[in-house]
Image (cartoon, rainbow, N blue to C red; front, side, top):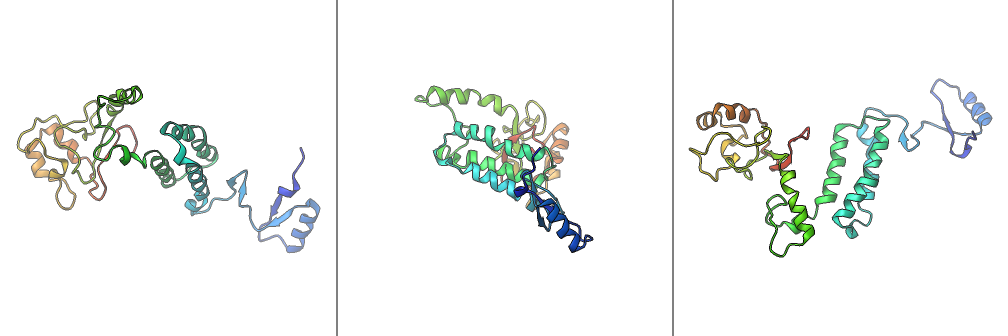
Length: 241
């Protein structure tokens, strides 16, 4: 095996005298550095501030995602993600446990890359509520045909609750239906989950116990609502769904 001396370097601890550092560097014919920054593209040392260490990975993914992205179709974007972008963190994960906040930031980059133009196609609705029109293409009809399969595994993650219809939408963490068991009664049919939350974002427990069956009450009171965030339709099977 031949060692590439141009790419080789040596670092010493503080306890090594300067004269010994110079002698060893002269014998080995390598550069002396204060510390090793990277090895095979990975950080050689990981300190307390892990976020800064993995910033380079985030920057690389961002550059790849914005490479000719305007000229790529949705299918092209999916191919770029699958074959190129997703392989980049996989290599790093083979050596390091990437912090959760870094993973969430990477997921955010990918989601924004895929869906940042969705308002262009669904300005007054979303992909889950659209239907095929009389002039829809075969491709578009095929995409919508798979919609029911996707919807079957999704439910609303509660934020403000204003977008979620209380009686008809899927927002209860209950497998299969994800819906309320109680039949509509006191609250009108167009009521939203927001009607069950007070100004502080807490559940109106008294109202809930009055309106709903016991099977629904305990489930509802166990849901964590975040009124500072928007309502989001997510996969029930995600850890943060």
